[in-house]
Structures are given as C-alpha cells and as structure tokens.
Image (tube, rainbow, N blue to C red; front, side, top):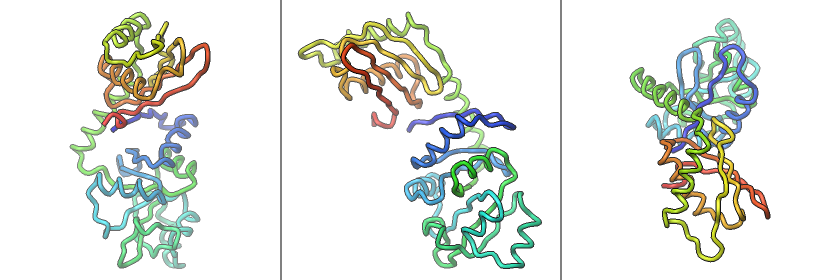
Length: 264
C-alpha cells in the first residue's frame, strides 16, 4: 500500500498541496488528517469504495452510522432535516467538537447511515485545515477517530518516516551507477533492439521523480518499468512511496507512475 505525506502550513495551507489532497479524495483515498478533536481518518462522503475501505480499516459495522464534517450550518441543512429548535441550538455550538445526530436527507449515502434510524452524525469543525478541505472538495468529509493514542502515535511515526524518505535527494553519479547495475542484472528482456539509459537524474521530491534519457521510449514496456522502479525502491529504501519515472528519447516522450501496491 502506498502512502503520500503532505506537510501543510497550520495557518496558511498551501493551495497546491490542498488541490493534490482533494484529487486523492476524489479518487477514493482514505486520509489521516487533523481536526479540532485530534487526528481522524476520513474520506469523501459519497465515494462508496472509500467508505467501504474506511469501514474495513476501522472495523466498523455497516449498521453503525458514520460522522461527517460540514463547512457550516447551511451545509448541514443539505444533508439533514433541521428543526427550528435544533437550528438554534446548533447555531450556538458551532464550530466545535459537538456531533449532532439528525434525520438524514437523501443526499447522505446509505453506506454512511444508521440503516434502521436513517440518522447521521454531523459536525462543523473548528479546524482551519479541515474546513479548507471541506470547502475545497465541495462535499462533506467522513471523520472517524484513528482509534487509540498508541495507534495514532505509531501512524504519525510512520508518516514522518515516509515524509523524510520522500524528501531524499539522490546524487546523480550514485543513481547512474545503480541504473547501470540494474540494466546489467540480466533480468530485463533485451530481445531485439536493446534498451539503453544514457543518463538518469532525480528531478523532484515528494513525490520522488526521476528522468531517464533513453535510446527509444517504446522499448520500455510496463513490466520493464515496473522492474526498474522496484529495483530502485530496494536500492534506495523507498518502499511505501510512489515513484514517478519520466522517459525522454529521440522518438517519443511518456511518463510512468508506479505505486508499490501494483507490485503485489
């Protein structure tokens, strides 16, 4: 399973990184993110596969409703029926750490509901990053506590370790030496015209990106790229991180994105 770490400024989160997180959420990712009640697991409300994934991670029964975060009171009214009395109470208490159990509208997916009561837990967080994510995605975000403090600590330790690795810069001579070793391993099919990597360089971090200058990009089939990328992960201890390889040759240009889960 691959993981990506986004370090956000607590008072002025970078728009570029926010957009990257939103893309991940739209693609069905489950994220660990900070709210005013601590770190929580979340996904986009309305993404069936993401909700199922989150339930599996936290081992939550289908019969239990999921709490989700809304941007403001107006946003709540899109997903729940709010009586006048409830409206007045909620208005006084938001934003904050209060979850309101309300009758859900049809906008709430069945996967997030209590199936017998048709209710949902809704909250408006007092957290800048959480509010920016909700507003940017234009949809509520599921919010489930990341279990106990010990597990959160372990998750954060792993996240920090992966972040440090994703920011690693590999010296060009060392990279090219490893590339030469991989190509001479005899494990790459060189039937017909032999593929060649004339020069390689790291061009970015977080995620790590490499650029290979090659004789012909069409010679680099999917399985060949997967082997090279897995070998790079092993040589530079990059397991758990996505790697992006760009190929540039005389005849064509293309990019390949590799995620560790593809190797399973």
